Amino acid sequence: MNILAIFVFHLKNQQTLQFKKEPTGENSVRTWKHDDKRIKKAMLNLFVVGGLPFKFVENEAFIEYTNALNGKVDVSCRTTISKKVSRYYQEERNKLVTFLCNPLNTVHLTIESWTSPSKRVRYIVITAHFIDDNWQTHKRIINFKELDSQQGEDIGKEVLKCIQGWGIKNVMTCTVDIASSNDKAIEFLKNKLPNLYNEGKYFHIRCMAHIINLIVRVGMNKNDESVKCLQDAVRYIRKSTQRIALFKKCMKVVGVESTKFLCNDCTTRWNSTYDLLKIAVDLEKVFYEYEMEVHYLEIVIDSGNTSFAYIFPLHEMW
Image (cartoon, rainbow, N blue to C red; front, top):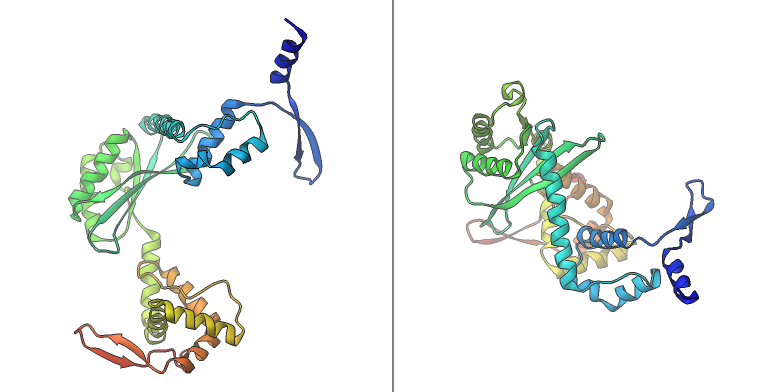
């Protein structure tokens, strides 16, 4: 073996120095060795966790970046990345199946369903929650699909199909909201799943967030006039790009510098109403300025007729 070959061999296998900052803030020097397998796995994580398109691997800027970090990195093409991600998914899925199939491992499920904004499609998502051998909590979405029926028994059948598909042996609890259809789904599952803990006494868990939302809604209804007034005003402004532009102009006029803007709330999430009110109160002066620009608001009545009403928050409502 000549001298050049020996040099190349040692160059490929030598460790390089790596400068790393310690928690104390001081720099330290450590050895670092090129690990092609680790680098490729980190690249897969980048695409999966970051939700990047596979074609990004062929982006000139990305290739330049990887070359600048380490010229030894072999950047794959989009087809190769696609195959590796599929293989990576299957490997991780098999690990999860192995864990869930073990009857000694307890699994807790949360089920949520909702209708799309178009009101045409209903979806269901099932999430598995568990603790691993190192006492670390995890949650994994194990089903996310379109729901053909809203009937309780049909929901139960879909959940049971998911449980059996993953081979889950030990389901301790199932958390759902307080819809009556979910009550029927839970009863269906209790009759179909064997060996439930304490005969299924603790199997049905009602969603705490949903219960809190109902409680808060009752309290807000007592002051519904002022809250509804703000909701209508925010909804009106956000419905038009011209109104949004005018409101932003008013923000500059009164000297309000805020990175936040008016947001609509969601009836099923009380904290979204809190966000709406908090932002609106912070922009109170802007509403006063906007009032000077808009003398009335157009409201479409359910009957199809159009009427005009002054719905902006009155001074005493703030």
